[in-house]
Image (tube, rainbow over all chains, first blue to last red; front, top):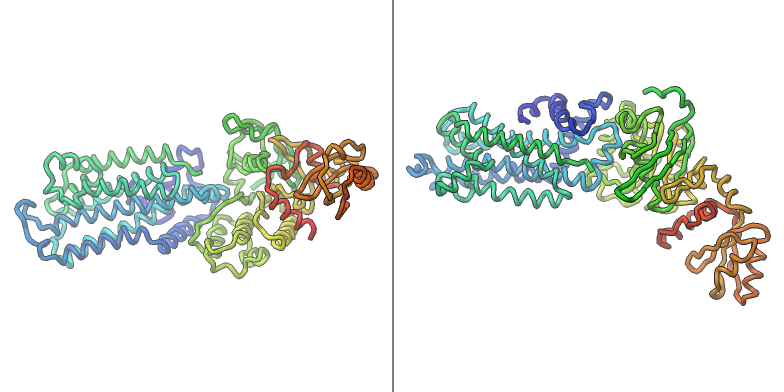
Length: 281
Length: 326
């Protein structure tokens, strides 16, 4: 599930997503008769709901940007330290905040509405119309991928333009790392949506996963300052691998293959689990 | 969107439907057919298998055995095509609380190639002034009417309405009945699942009485009432307590039911005389006597030996009766 597929036009994006999701359900891959505009309306509805109860925008965009500005305003964060490999704390925290965007959107903003819709029978109601319920899931993915792209671009651009971060050493590496990280986090979010009986449960599970993941991402103790054993564990967590690869793309060059493979493995395993366990009612 | 040949005039054909949930048999060997253009009622107490039956018919559940054809389509394999022509109102369905009524209608309208006119539909359902309201701010009755509107928004050939007037006040129920009769007059086949006897009696061309997963009888409301025998009913308020067997011992009496302080006696012949004289002999006065001809309620009791309202609370019974008297 690469983010690139979904950031295209709405209809072509849906094709990929729903064929992936609907395969084991035995449903038609793409409904032949439902008007195409129905999917656009569905994305529009999800966007409205997200605006009226802005979990995604607040946690996925607001919180990381506020933290970026706070960190950027502290002079101590702009001192270069040999223990950080000559980087500043601001440098160190930029990839952590990028990871925060993906964690907030993938672990909270994506699964909570889906679990709520199932809990309330909204997905079931939808399955009595010609519109397939997987379209709601696809609409949520489109919406959250869109929010993630905006938030990630804002963070990188503000970091460079306002707080003197150098241009990324490897732009391709950066984009690659963001895509595989997004795939892993969103797939994990779908597992949460799959196993949560209620919207509240989804929120609770999301939190239970979010905080340990952000710990290993280095939000409280940056990876450079972790004891090596702890960092070794961090390398194999989704956000630890993400920060490792993002940091090297930003400040050193194209990332090593290990974080990419770790994230791909999480993405594939989680996607399989989500497909296996997702229920529409 | 072809109506397959061989079933002309038949909208829905259900034969030998069976559905179990674990050890529980929800629907057992149910067969019936619904003609195009009729209002077909499925009447029975809660837990009788009404909802399971229609959920199988609209493809929400897969039957264990038996076959179902809806406009010639198989609900399981032809689901999408079916949902273009069959509108469904589910019992207790909920919609996103922070969407406005107009936005929900707009969304559901986009699912269908030839949707109904939203303004006309909402006007007919008394939702015209509510388009800007959030779903969460609607009353129970308004939510129910929105749910009916969504079942009709695709201009379906068949509308399946499950407990459509539950939660509506008497006035709104009557309005809804009129609306449904109007929809039928435009040629739409309607399947009405209900536990309200008066609703089935008032609205349905034919009614299937369902009890414990089986169909007890299918007939017109008048035909079913006729099967209740004699076709009379006496309702009264006794001045004191008495043993029901006092009345059931009389040849005129077929059934005796208690409804709060009231007693409802079904039977035939000189029923009123028999009741009053028998009670008087036991020193009990029958006050506030009302006589009615037999109805579906009696038919149900007669055919199943159980009360239609056996599992409902008194409030619901009173509510349904208040409406019946309007």
